[in-house]
Image 1: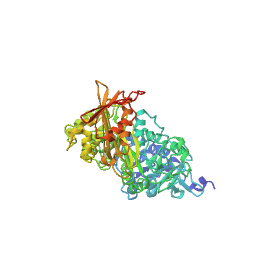
Image 2 (image 1 turned 45 degrees about the vertical axis):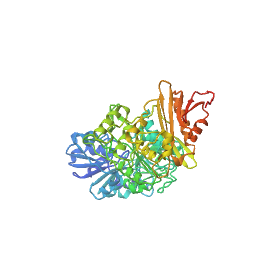
Image 3 (image 1 turned 135 degrees about the vertical axis):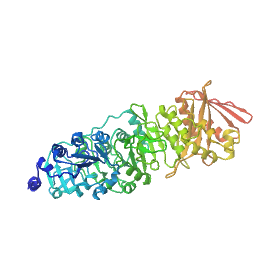
Image 4 (image 1 turned 60 degrees about the vertical axis):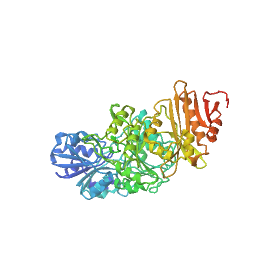
Length: 622
């Protein structure tokens, strides 16, 4: 028997289906690309029949005509997440907004804390067993359908059938209408250079075998684009869009390390292009589940190296994140940000990330601010935040003091705003009164990993946020090493002495550190190297120091090679250095470099002059 004949008793015309809804009831509308647009259109056409009907839903891609001012008194919308189609109505007070974690909405619906009397949904046609499918949006829709006193379905033959828990018995639908139409598409935005740079910084935090959560937009797409050299990635997310497909087809996504739904992409909804809808249709690679399942922080924490990538509107200097409002105006919603940030933070090897553009409104506003705008809400607390990423780098806030956080965030802010941010931080006594402004290197310094007999070291540029690490490093040095480096005994290295090390804003200076990489532990600095150029001679004075227990591991040689590369790139003619005659290890580092060296011994101190000119002949005079 044809399914339409089998369920003919419950088939209705549009007019008949909407006429079943009583005035004053709470209506739920399906989410995202699964909005039942035909039912919504008829709902509004019959507006005069309704009075004080509440309409709730998540973000929907279709129209939302019921929020128009002329329907005041008939419908009142309550947004769980504010989309563009209802934002103006919320701002003008014609619609409401309920701030709520996405993971909690299903339980609120089931307990009738958020009551649903009638659910309007879009589904696929029933299969031969009499089951329809919620398709591209399971999220909070399943809870609404299971709880509603009446379910009215728009049966669309173009709705994809997606594996997971989105199947319903056709017998559980009280009335249905047939409406074939394409799902609304959300085209991908072209990626600009800022988004691509943010994506590269975020991707650098993603290890092979990581499990990803991401949203939709330029930054998630740019991050995915930068992951084409990773292997065995997994996907556990509340939603995804087209960017994931390229990684799947490229073989980067295998899901083989996921402890739950291994070898499958786990999500609760999706929207994007028709290519995406065709790809997920009846594809066993995908499994969709309700948001109280996908967004459960405990399940998220069980994933393998969970990386949660979320965005924000503002981040203040203490690390508080505003993601749902612009001042007093509500803009979007909490969504799943906190669910995934907390879950990733609890996950062994997990990385919670807030990725934002450094500025807004054409560069006229900084997204990193001294304090959040008046009225702006804290979505993610300063205690939950770890990584904040902009096009200018990565600020790691985990376990950091307010002083360290402020400096880290100023360093990844747009250069045009760093001075005023530092001034604000000083006014609030977040930082030292004499704190210099965090600056980036004059040209990017390539990070390298050095393998030594004792372990792996990362060689990178010194950052103003390294002050505490640098202090710990100094006080770990022996008296002999301190004397060999500074040629005098230093018993203290207070804050003001460190300031000079961080002046790296021009091509005349460079400073590097080598830090030991230990799984599950904060890296420790075990060596430093720097140079400062004399502009009269274009020769740079260079100095090194390696912690005693890490000496004779090839670190000095690697640091010298790195400094040579930087200096040559910046046009420095050569190095000068003063080395005590007894410091044979450092003399050996210089002399085995293969660089032309002229050395003079005076009062037990070798004064070295090292040419960096390519092709220069090596000479040595003592």
